Every structure is written in C-alpha cells, then in structure tokens.
Image 1 (cartoon, rainbow, N blue to C red):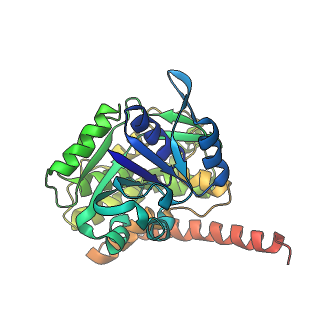
Image 2: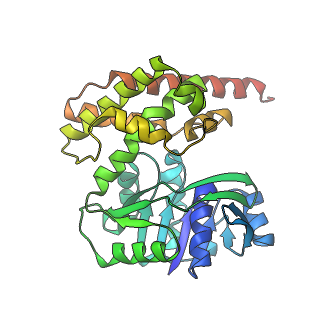
Length: 316
C-alpha cells in the first residue's frame, strides 16, 4: 500500500516508521525543512522499548513529491486541517482514502468539503510519540490501540484493508461500527485534563493531587457526556470519573498534555476542536456547557496574551 502521512510530527513518524518497516511505501510529509532534511539524509531515528534504530523513510515538505497515494493519514494540528489538505491535493487520486487520526471532533466536516465525504474514514489512536529533534523521535507503539471506521458504521473492504495493513505493521487496530462514539470516548479523556493543565501549567502529578481541579474536570466531562447523549451518540463511558481515571492511566507524574506543551512552545492549541466541540454540540442540542465555555475562553485569553507579547517583541 502507498501511504502518505500528512503532518508527520512525532506521532505521524511513529506510525510511519512502523508502516515503512512493514514494507509499505510510506511518505512522511512535514512543513519543517530541518526535520525532512534530517530524515532524507540519515533516515528517521526511532527510540523505543527495543532500543534505537535508523529507519530509511521517504520524507518531503511538498505533497507533490509523493504523488497520488492509496491512503492519506491526516495528523496535522486541528487548526491547520483545511490549509494542509488543500495544499496536499496531489496526494489524492481516483481511489485514495483519507483517514483522520487527529484529536477532537470536527475534522471530518472540514475534510469532506475538500475531498468529499465518500473518501473519508475516521479514527482515534492511542499511539504516542515525542519529538527529540529533527529526524529523531521517541515512539510509543506497543500496546497502544488505534480505532478506525466508516462514518456510517459499515464494515467495508477498504476499512478492513487499512486495519489489516496497520495490524501487520504492529499497530494494534480495531475496526469500529461506532466510530463517532469512539471519537467521543477519546474526546472525553482530552476534555478531562487538556484545557485545565494548559491554564494551570500543571503536570499530571500536580493535577491529580488537587481536588478542586478534579471537581472542575468532572464537571467539564459531564457536560460532554450530556451533549453526546443528547445527540444520540453511543458512549462506552457514562460516568465522568471513568474519563478522569483513563486520562492518566500508565502515564508518569511528569506527563504534560499536548495542550500544555503547545502553550509552553508559544503555539496556539486545539481547544476549538476539544472543549470547543463540546460547546458547539451542546448549543446544537440544547445542552448547557458553561464549564467548557469558560475553559475555552481562558485558553483563548492565554493565546491572546502570547500573541500580544510576540507582537511587542518583534522589531518593526
């Protein structure tokens, strides 16, 4: 299978390395010239439980270098989805399937407007990755599940083929007949901790030691559960405590959420596609979401402060 990973950061490279080693022609597309040049020059350095190795990967900053592929895996930051996909139409041929494994909700609508809903698969992954430097990642693939499915819940030949390719590459993958519910399950986990740690700048060890913050987290998750249930979504979790517990499972006290990492780097966050999704679905189905709306507003305020500081520090 010929595969392109659009947004090959740490997670995309972890998945891409596994697929490459399984024999698939896998292109890692990333905007960073330094990251791409390092991979082109010496391969991708992968650190994992088995040790360190160099994987000879195909890497490019431009989608046109890869040409049309069988499968596009979208892993760009949520707020780059529209721009990135429109700039990568060279990847899309007559039979190309597009799979989003991004955090949050709402990407499918953006992608459908660009490539057509009939091409789309949706999914969620618990695979992890940390960027150690250009062309160098820490990979967390073992024991981490990925869920994919058709938006209408059908078990089609194409979704089965993608799952088979992933599983053969050591990426544990389950085909879901309720992918929207699966996506909401992952969203509940992100709602539990992401924005709160972004606002407070706390690690997981600090967050889980503060009862007042747990109360806020559980209230945010309850709003999300209420919004999903009002929309008729089938969830595997019905109690906020389940999402709160799952969020920290197997992670060290020093762990930082992706939202906190983004803010520490001075980048905007994906809050619009996480807590913001809860607010939008709540509004659509008549469910009040004041806690999530407040968390979104606070994160937006932090982003505004960062932008103003950058503007003042930039020479005229």
